[in-house]
Image 1: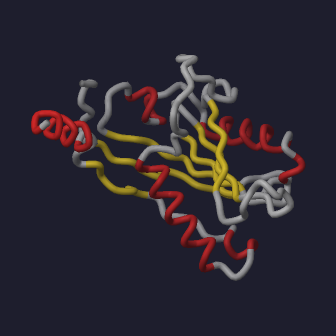
Image 2: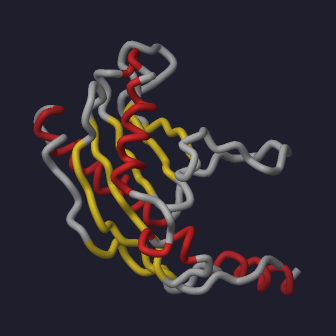
Image 3: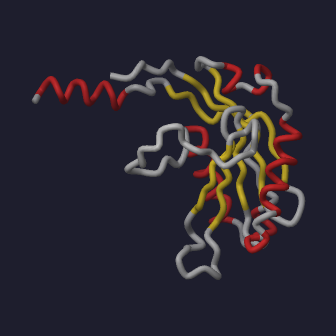
Length: 179
């Protein structure tokens, strides 16, 4: 069984609009209460959030074909994930879906897994990211236009505490004992 995770809490500590040709939102987030604070909390990392934001804006400008599609950037010291709405001009995408790219925050390189074994499922993010996406989806659904949507930001503060991040492992262990 993997090492248990301690309870933790995700926070938004900053947000701002994206600048440049890509419309969107930038959320500076962190996770408190976990080990490896330099990877989870900005004040313990050697990274400059303003430079991270500029770096991701430059990366996004390289995707000029998506200049009209809002992006949501969620940056933590260890990983930055960029979500975007589906391209209505692409028959393989749906405007109602999110599409994501994962970056190493320190290098701004697309995240490459260290284990070459293909994963059976695609990770979409931690509890903090999911909370942001849920609220952003609500904003999207309620806004009458893209311009109005881009004005709405989730307030700074806690996104909620994860009191037992091990419940699935505990449930599986119980189920295994019952077999």
